[in-house]
Image (spheres, rainbow, N blue to C red):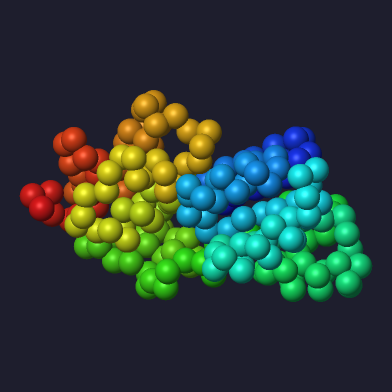
Length: 223
């Protein structure tokens, strides 16, 4: 799940982005509306979090423009404006959720997750590949009935692979889906994570390297 966070307060943006990343979300950051507009133009996000009042303008007016242009990315407004009229205005402009500052970070993370799920293409909540079972709704992974413990990032990579089982998924696609703009695609971060994931999934191996492409999840190594 990929999120755009638009907040001009650097300390707040850093803290919120860190919390969202710790929850397994990929987060791109912008400090003003022009940067947000550029990011939304080049990237498909599952959710966008906007500080309502930015030095470059009112995010509500910007989101209203997005909606008029047919852009349906779910939007959560963060704001110190807490009157009923302010909230009504936020929803009327096309906002999907509204959280007043100060806020509890776990609540923000839960709301962002909810909006991301709302934007996702409908898909079965439980995927099965051989004796592997991945419950994407409850974020549970079992192999041969045994519950496994994965990190948020390991689950994110496995979720992409299991949704495309028996297909080769490129390294670039995994990086784009499971990390954010802070990641370094040329580093071995993905290879290390896949190695850890293979160890946790056990034998016989399910994740196979597709030379020159990336990885494939399949119970049959010959496919």
